[in-house]
Amino acid sequence: MKILGIETSCDETAAAVVENGRNVLSNAIYSQIEKHRPYGGVVPEIASRNHVIKLPGIIRDALEDAGETFDSIDAIAVTYGPGLASSLLIGYSAAKTLALRLRKPLIGVNHHEGHLHSVFMRKDAPAAEDVFPMLGLLVSGGDSSLVLMRGMGLYEVLGRTIDDAAGEALDKAAAVLNLGYPGGPIIQKTAEGGDPDAIRFPRGLDHVDRGKWAYKYERDFCFSFSGLKTALLTHVKKLDHSPEGDELRDIAASYQEAVCDALTSRVERALKRFPIKSFACAGGVSMNKVLRQKLSDLSQKTGDALLLCPPSFCTDNAAMIAGAAYEKYRLGKTDPEPQDVNPNLRLVDWI
Ligand code: KG4
Image 1 (cartoon, helix red, strand yellow):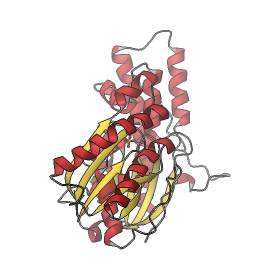
Image 2 (image 1 turned 45 degrees about the vertical axis):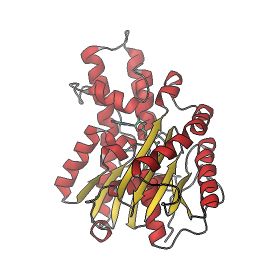
Image 3 (image 1 turned 180 degrees about the vertical axis):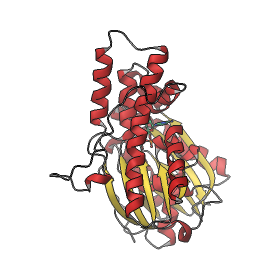
Image 4 (image 1 turned 90 degrees about the horizontal axis):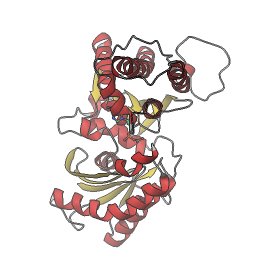
């Protein structure tokens, strides 16, 4: 079964054709980074206008690269949330129109579910019965969550960030240090050769505190990056110069270390609490080399299998959307098709 996936939830315009959920026949992506770079972040109106301009060509590329046509694909999958409303609407309108015109099923996919699914986007990915229950660390520019997946389509969100997402924390740090956008890859590059222990930046919510907690999720599994960001700002303000060279490398390495420690420690807590067969990490920040190393050290320590997303599927793409859609289709869960986009869509069971 071949599914054409469409993804426009933020600033990547993407389409892909995936066969039977894992065999990626094409993965066309237009990254709008250059359009947003001058503003230091994604500007929603610029994003949606560029989706309008680029999406038709990207869909054509995805079909051509896969050697497929509109007639030969079996279904259309589309991200319907969460994300920027004006961006989601462009991909969603295109997908719904195609599905109507071609008389093919439309499968709506949660963007976060797509990210979690991206760890299976390789032909030799393990079978579902070997990985579930699986703990998923989802770290993107817009969200950081810890999710317990008891099976395909069975989600329990254990914890989330209570303020910034990990990617956002890296993007903001790069802005403070005048390094450019997007921050994650730039902080990683700047940190090379730096001392990760040079500055002890805070790991938000790290200390054990059983006091009052108003948030919906358990404190032990939540993240907070706003204190870390403030600590960086204060550190830089106290210097009477713009950091460069070794000093800049040390700041970047220490900051990156704090972000990765905060993420890894929550995973470790959850691994101790829940009997799982594997744990996984997905989303743009899962590209980060230090985070990948820390998770792989954790896997060695606990003996739990680790599934990491192939680098080409870490950041936003449509292959992961088509892949996740296949599971829904296979299990007969395509209806009711989404009637609208939902910018605040939560991960909920669909099984
Ligand atoms: O998953 P993604 O493409 O977007 C969302 O769905 O939100 O993730 C984008 C985020 C950005 O914040 C970017 O700075 C971060 O992923 N990122 C990285 C790296 N590459 C991208 N963060 C850390 N290290 C990287 N190598």
